[in-house]
Image: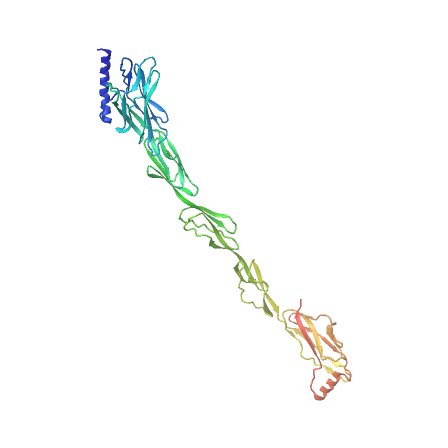
Length: 499
């Protein structure tokens, strides 16, 4: 058998084997040469067959050669390229390219001889049409290239069928290879936060992929779902040993800050992050001596904005009412600027209640209010002082003249006045040897007359002789004739509490 016959026999067996695969994956169309090489003798050189294989765990972002064959005039290479990033719709962009390099010194020209229809797992995905103008001279390269999107990670069986457009009848193997498309992880975030990386990411089988979830200001992470199932409000999540497509999504909850502040000290009692429309938890209000808690400044049961809630307090003052002896009659707490209510007026023997020592109609500080009393001044003075005028004009005065202080305090004679004393008479009022008052044509003030509480003071009175022509002499003679005593004069006293 000639070399050409042996080569034809091998080709026939190869085509038969490959046609079964192609027919199982695509419409029944005869395979054709990738290129036709013409020289002056119009000789056709068929590229040597290339054994098939599947490329697993294909890298992204670089060209991967999956087929090479070499003939007398040219070298044919086939490559694919997987884009490193997914398309916006989640698909993966794949580019397939076949190149023919025309070896120098071989003569002739290299042209494309067939179109290609590409299939992804048996579904048509791309087409390379006729190109009559593309030609490679010695040392030059011509290429066929097409890009198409595939969906879903894992194995993708890429095949092709060829249709002649230059009339050749030679056949060779078309594209038939398997690539592992990286698995796709689709990440999304709702309003109020972010997930990084966002969108569709490509992950090689067996690799890991980490995600970071962050809430925007005014939001919190509400939930993270992985493949439709909640994994909780996580700030990060990692897919380990990826062997399939996945999805991850984050949802966020609008929140507000509610700050509770103590009005008295200005301190922050509590800071709470509250979901929109929810209610804050009321903290315990601090207690302060001298203050009364009156509630909160804002309603926080349905929070729709950031709130600063002030704990309202009213300043209080203690008003203590005391008796004259220090006994507490009443203690009352009143608000700042408020009015206290006095107790019933206390009583004190020998004294008259005259009111309170402080104003409590507008209280602005703690005060002690003391009951005020005035003593009841009661002094008993003899109403008459029986005196006798003797024939020689001598006036005889009783020796038991006394003034009795009935008051509970010592008293002092604030004034002593005489009425009806003749100008020619005189008298002296003595406390022992001390002159306290006298008359000599007018009242004559002596030393003070002081009488202890609830006690008596004996005084001595001495009156001058009465003349035979004086007023008192005339009154004495008239009384003697009538037998009736007459008032010759009067001494009046005014007493006050001694200090």
